[in-house]
Amino acid sequence: MRYRCLVADDNLIDRDLIVKYLSKIDSLHLVAVCDDGFEAAKVLATEQIDVLFSDIDMPNLSGLSLVRSLKHPPVIIFITSHVEYAIEGFNLDVIDFIVKPLTFERFYKAVNKAVEYLELKKAFNDKIDNSEELFQVDKSIQAKYFFIKENNALTRISYDDVFYIESLGDYSTVFTAAGKHVTLVNLKKMEKHLPGGIFKRIHKQYIVNLNHIITIGSNEVKLSNSQVIPISAVARQDVYDLIVSHTMLARSAD
Image (tube, rainbow, N blue to C red):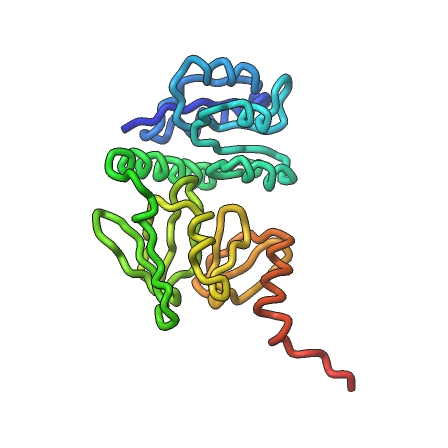
């Protein structure tokens, strides 16, 4: 299946580069190219668009204002030179946020994430009426696992095996030592039911297993599987208080 996409960017060179990259990807069909947010809004009002690639700093209507104005937004991928908009962008539940200069490798990664989300949504829409059934945590003291529903079966996942969980809007992807599992449960529900002493939401899009954190930087953490995950300033302090401050060796006074 080919998904319909729209490009909105006021920079001609950047627009042409995105169009060039899209021409290499068979799963997407380019419907329109716009040079500002207002023109993009008019296209979105008349055309069925599955994926919107949008700059943020545009004349007439910014990318952020454009997305806020949409009652039923498509999958959003922001592509911008302004990294300072990242938090605000992710607060709008965008699927990805790319900082220019844009490379094909980074663009293709974002496209794959968007397509995966759209295909999951399509697969689940006719099958699932109640997402509560998709995620079950055993509340007993001894339990160290949870269940998710995937492929019409319940899959048991041990806490220790989970490296991190990534949001895909209404869905979540659980990354484990054995591979990844996708379920129709949003990150907010995951956060509510998983034990806080083991799992911590460190970013709008990520929950990590605290036991797998090996490095804490100023804006990211590195996990034991070498995956690097962004972390907010507030979450960084919480993680520090939870797993570092009481175990860190103090500098000798001698």
